[in-house]
Image (cartoon, rainbow, N blue to C red; front, side, top):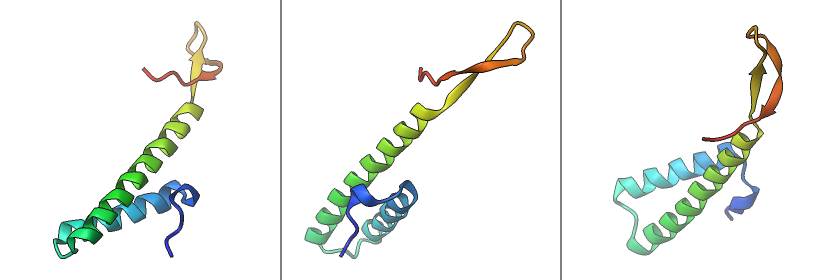
Length: 79
């Protein structure tokens, strides 16, 4: 039984996605199974993107004072 996608770490989701891509690229997967793999792969891709977005939101940018020395941190602002 496959681990639910929401329980996978980023690394495990990425490995699972890479395995699915390999299966699909082989061209040997029956159509119905290929469709199911594609659907799971799409959900895994979204899980990875969500985890990356969450990680990016936690990045803090260092503020520098007038002399170029670190003066504190502020939340990362994507831009």
